[in-house]
Length: 288
Figure: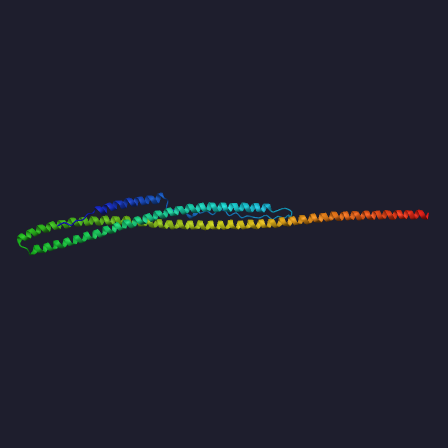
């Protein structure tokens, strides 16, 4: 009396499991899940624009504006470079996450296979137990039977005992295969946990890079504000210079007019003095 049971599926799944475990490890190594360490996140040097003071009220502050323009260009370049770094690290982190998700799913699938094999193993073990009960019952019949029946029962018991022994060997082998499969699944679970930890580190590095980029963008905005302020100050100084030049021109024109008035007055005085002198001369001549 035999018990149908096959271990072929279990062994095939075990072979697939081992191949997948090897392939999964190769993927982890090839894709460099080891991560994007924080040391790769390097902050761009922050340019500190300085607006030189213009001590002269007669010249526009062109040099200060040029310095601010250069600082803005440098900060915008830093923002662009930092964005490229962030995009690259985000791509690495996304790739690592996809690999981790794939491994997670494979572990779940293989665990399901192991669970199915465990169920089959339990059923097979129950079949062995049931068969042993049949053997025990046959032995009991042997003890109570006639000599001829005893002989026949002994033969049946021997046959059933052999079937039970063979079935137990199959069950033992199945248990070994299931244990091996479970070991592979456990090892794969360790790998995916390690990948998960590394993925979290990668995401933290990406977050840090984004924060640094935000700081650079803020510096660029501040530089724009400084530029606007410098341009406003320059316009005010140019207007002040124009007004001063206008006042100086007006004062110069007034001085010219005043000088001319003085000259005209001096001419009148000179003419008057000449007339007085002539009058004195005439008077003196008449008195003589």
